[in-house]
Image: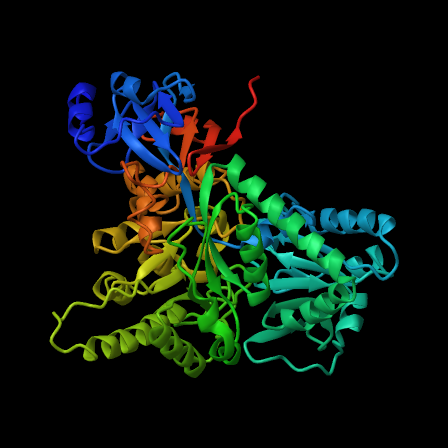
Length: 576
């Protein structure tokens, strides 16, 4: 990229006829600013209220600096648009902070020790919750095991008086102990629900592993337990979890969060926080409610915040399959390491079509979780059906796809025939760079080399076909850190330093755009977010290193110095 001379840039961006000369509230000087726009780089910005009022050279900021202007000297640090988390679970992020963190555990024995320690502190009957285990990442397989998953005996022994519910890292499976199965009404005679499975051993005994929709059996019991608490306690807990999520976003430079599925009740909490001025990060929300509930109440929850731009609810979430790690992803051919299974279809296609019809009629984006190649194909088929329907409603319009910006969430494993369909249909590929390097240790086992090379996390193929990729972490499936996610996107290197099909890497600029302007576009928000331009929202992050030029091995050590939302400094790293 070519950097224009700063004085020429100032002349091009600061027109006296267009810009009021009132002092700015905040001026940031001496930065290397990647605008994601043209011109590509600048030195300084001025902010008045919630929006950027000027972008240019240091010298041009003098006239925007008054007695009440706060001036931040960036001292050469890197400034870019705030990161937009394009797929995460906001309340799940807060809840994760209050549960057992199993991400770093490297054995089933380590996890059961953690549960036993929690049980010693818990009252009898209290549920013990954890998240983040992944059997494919343990140093040794559990013994005994079924399909690589442990059985519940050690977990039951660790907490005999407490129901235990441990969510898989993917969120698409869970381990429970005997007490939790008892509370949930799960017995040997319990049948698999549609779109789910209770894993059993060769003798038909329950192992405690609940795959996909079978998790609902345990979560209903857990939610009933939570519901028995006083309403004031439940409300206080929800607010505390939201506060924890805001804190994690801000310290990681995330200024907007696209929430991948919330209930009406959760949106009510977001509405209350907005009215109180306590939405510290901008939220864009997908509703995750049954079709009947949407028909009754969904239209009243659709809101596009054109004033404060703090809360927008304009999408619907559905899941067509599960995750690869738990062998729930729906595949066109059986798993290489489990030939008896091709995964699970978790939402009937007729139900997805009903949701699509509602979304089209009421102006919602439709966002479908699809990980396996079969799930992606079926999702694109449904999208194409309704895009054609929309096009037929206006036959005099050009034959291009209508700008619905429906989204495939994850799009992890694709058939080669389906890759060009994203661009052709105008479908957003909402992907997570960190999933590639996190999943790499077991992808070859699940898919085999041919399928993995053809369609596993094929960012390059999608971008070259003209598709839009929006990046994120799927937090709390992964940590929310954008820096680690950026590193994964541009290197595809895992913890062992090996690159997973490196030809599919994004360039650094592509990765940054996927986290800013393209993520904004995925939410119809590119006119207000995602680049640094006069008139746009003043959502920016200042980093310790230039992600576009720093040596590759230094990317992960980059630190967030400031997070600014709407011109207000919401996070500032304490000096050492």
